[in-house]
Image 1 (cartoon, rainbow, N blue to C red):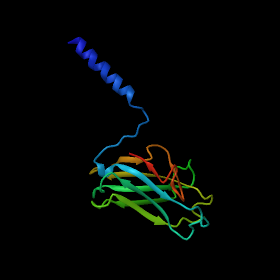
Image 2: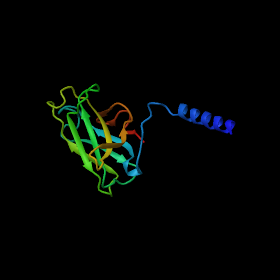
Image 3: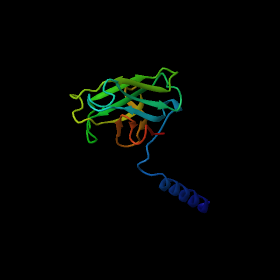
Image 4: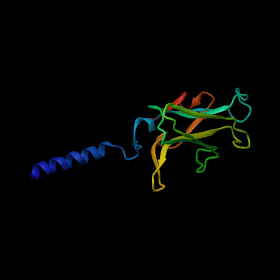
Length: 157
């Protein structure tokens, strides 16, 4: 019996060591799992697509859930702690791509670079916010005219 308990404890320790401490926690159903982060930004009112609205959003692994909210946060600097824009969309039960368009002005972003992240979340009956997924898992992604750096999307989940 003691040998069995020791073996189980050793296996648990090995599993705990195999999961990196910085790994993002994803919880909930596939409708809360952000698969891709979308960001198409042409700079401050002078990029090659200055006449086109800037676009920000997410792609989920399944159609959105009606009880969840999906939010994209937009920052002027990668070290900013407060977003200058926040876009929230309530899940509708049918769409797996959620997003918005907004023409960012030079007053909102004077240097021509914006950084984003997104969350899926809900509020409990007790009024607490529960985040189910975040994209990217850590930090911020740079939004460019070609999409979120690197490439056109950030594979998040």
